[in-house]
Length: 336
Figure 1 (cartoon, one colour):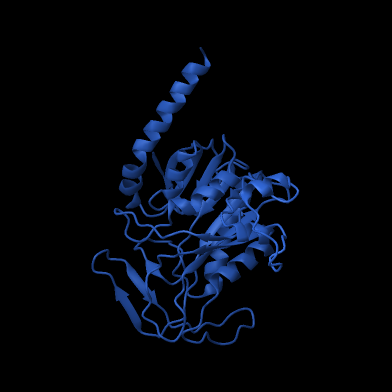
Figure 2 (figure 1 turned 120 degrees about the horizontal axis):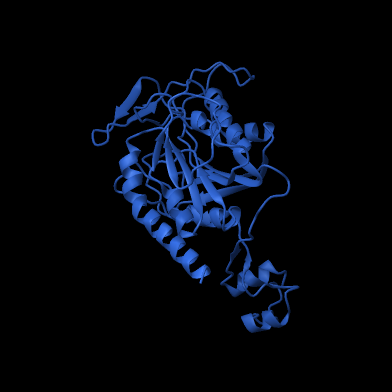
């Protein structure tokens, strides 16, 4: 399921789905035809965090500005290959400025964790240096540059991690969230509304403007609310909110924590039609493909590190076979 791409070219060919393309994501994207993808969802490398030992990797740029520019160049190509109704979802974490001359290596994985001395001179008037211990604000800089380049930012989703790792710091709060940005190519786009349950009666009352200060008013049960009609309450639930409580996940064959399948389930359901194609330009261990196939949707992945060939192939091959078998069966019964 792999195709190597080594040089940047403009040779556009028919897009092959349910395949991982190995190569630089910008190089590979230039070979994809215009408006061939329904949605993109991905988690790019975070800036200044890890060295994966691969040439041309994102995340080790000397300045935040250079990182954001290169990252947005990738999404310029994503925008080209998206269909007019397409959307783009990006999970991106922040980095702290750390003390200089400190770098540590993991003996188990060989991945280098970088701790830079942030002494940067920016084109914009940010000052001569970043102060140690300050957040770099990578997600905010990225979102602003994306909108500067013509994307429409529909939501900032907060991924709250109830099971986040404890932090050793004592002079700030432990960070237990990351952001997921929801962009669209055009003002009108495909979106399947996502409904979440409202379980608590008091939440139902607050949600639909019922009086909570009047002690004489009895609690409103579900049956009473249904009698009020859809003008006051949707018995199926409410429009999904933007703070998602999802535990982190791990994948034993990957070298680091991967984003959990649950984080992708709602975006892929919302943003990709049933016969659509989901793109992940930073494919990693293949979580995006796993969730797409579980929803009976096609996918395309791009991954720079060839070491992930065995990881994604081992993880996805059974699901690919299952999906093809199901498609053949459906085609057989539809012709009967």
